Amino acid sequence: MIGFGEFLGAVAAGIDTLAGFDRQAAFDAGVQPKRVRDWSKVHEVYFGSTRLKRQQKAGVDKARVNRVSMDTLILIEERTKLISDPLERWRLRHRLLDVRGNYETVRRRAKEIVPTVEPPPPEDGVTFTGSRSTKRTMTMTGPERFMADLEHAMSQDIDPSRPRGPQLFDAFVKLMESGGGVAQAAPRPLVLVPLPEHIRIVRQEGDETILGLTDGTTMTGAELLATCYGADLEVGLFHPQEGAVNLYRGQRFANQKQRDLARAVTPACPVPGCRHGADACELHHITAWKHGGETNLNNLVPLCRYHNRVNDDDPWRQARGRVERIRGAPVWVSPRGYPVINERHPFGALSSLFGNPIFR
Image 1: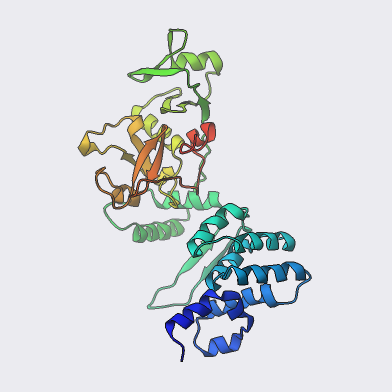
Image 2 (image 1 turned 90 degrees about the vertical axis):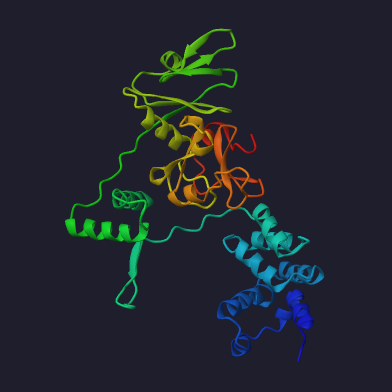
């Protein structure tokens, strides 16, 4: 019988422990099947047949000398599995095996060392499960444009005071039974115009923005655009520090204009990992209305229904994080004060024109 300390020693000495790997013995010992499969993959990499014997031996030596744990060896395989060139994959393994530190340290460094490789897209399809408690589950994968149109059509009559899921199901059934189909969304191009930093935003008068130029004169945003652009375009002005300035089109509705520009600046909920596009979001006051925040463009950001409700509206609260404006762009800030960009849809107007607001 071995003690816990001896067990941890075996885990830490990952490569030597896995040298004698026996798949069936692991199953018979009650080890989780996924863990057995992970061990099997690592064993095949370091002890299986290969044409790259020298690289394999160097990897075994590095793993042994650096006492790379079993879990870290699994992590390295997970991070390098999409690299198609075997020699390049070994080069990256060697770099990760040389990283000194615990599992989390290697995980963070892997993001810097291993190049991002997009996995192949899943195939279109629909699957159904069997019945369970008189219910079945359908899973559908399809082109993002069609799926976004479908979600939009199903979300039209959502009551925000009630759970969203059951309402979406009812809307889906109604859509199928009506036979009306799903209307395709018409793309709405918006020309993004970057204002030079030397043009200062002086004031906003009604529906117009007054710009101060370095020659001591002023001009309106509309006059600037009339000088440089045609009259038939829908054009948004954006300043690298102030953010969205104004939107120019044939008809102007202040509330809709604010929403349009807020979506252009933040085309998706800015909370890291959130999938919801701005069209499915609510307009959130960065400085809460109850704290005197105004319904002005520089105080508005689209947030999904969930994150709008859990946002730390009170600045002294540090529970779930909050959205703040950094160099004109709304950015989620963690409870510990770290700004983080939502990388799922990094195509906001300010990012496209001026780069990441955190680093510029």
